[in-house]
Image (tube, rainbow, N blue to C red; front, top):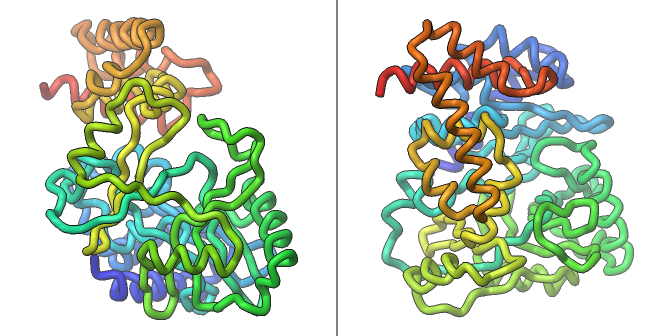
Length: 374
């Protein structure tokens, strides 16, 4: 990745928005509609057939009282770009909670977008080099940084989300107890997992309320620090450090994550010497994710991506049977020979009225076209 060049491009993007009077979500929403060409330039986006527009792939979020702007890729990017890996340009991959001030100065750089094993071309043929594998935790990401002598935390999409409010409360407790204001280097961004009953996803943490340090970066050098340096920062700030796996090879790790007896664990993040990060999730955890997301939209998206049967194959029997029944409903409608408009409208009515969004309507249309081309 050309990280430094990509950061400069995002900085120019922020300055352009600021100069045009964009200062909140509402003004950004209108601005991005009118500046598609500008966004394509700043995000190095050369749209190909089938790609969504770049102005639908990036969300901006704004601090309620400070001149800070965050950038995050949208749910549309997350849900559709698996089919277009080249659409993940370097600037777009940096939009994972990256923070600038309104003058375009970089304030905090979290991780770049990284992928599950086998999900993207760069995670299919892995490099033959040394690596660190750390435990992947199941809370909410907290991005900790300093601005105007204040210690702040945001999630990767909202300065004022419930998780951000909770994380800032926890941050103040950590900072007060361990004297962070005297020792915090303002160039450092700490990346923590917020573990709390209110941030529970699937795993149980026995009611714990804590930060777990999972990484750190430098906003000046743009370094993404390796495990020993992050461990030293954990000791300095009295934060629990994510565990290091002591296995011998990637093949060993790939075998273990398939173990059907593993419970209450998500997986690992592997960081190769070159800096490449790859997620490895236990099949038991993926099964929980699939079961939780099991709906008509998910089934259509997985069908189009070509990995539906793989996803369904790890489900428990009763969930698998429900999924197969829902899939059959989809295929009965899609293959009934009626005009495309009639079929996507029928798919659209499979869900409750409150779920019939423009996004779901687009999925239905896309699915019909995909099916007819097979």
